[in-house]
Length: 134
Image (cartoon, rainbow, N blue to C red; front, side, top):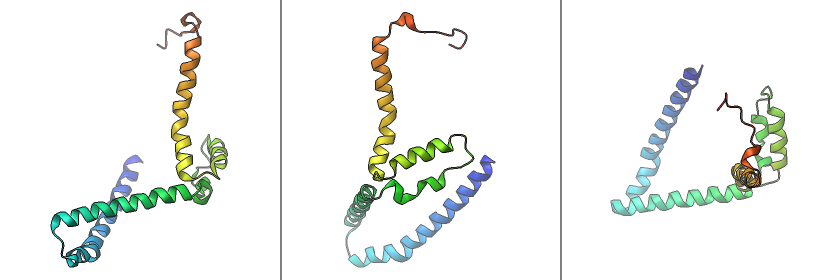
């Protein structure tokens, strides 16, 4: 099953690369040639365009909420933890994508810090060790 998914992905990716290559050749390249700039200037222009697109995307992430994305529809309803996913996404609905991502990615670190704090208060002798699983 996995290889079938990989083959489909690779085929779709190859199609996309072909489409993008054609767009570069037929649409972007003529504009860059027409500008009359030297190669290094064109490379700088492309880097600047990349930064502009990234900035626009970051702004969009700040403006778009999780609710706007309707992510709940992507949750596999048959998955054993689907209900937990949907509840968590509902809590995040009103947050921007940027804020929600910060919350999601920062939470494991917060958990680690809580556990670390608790471990500083526990005595080593309090550990219940199953030596057969160590």
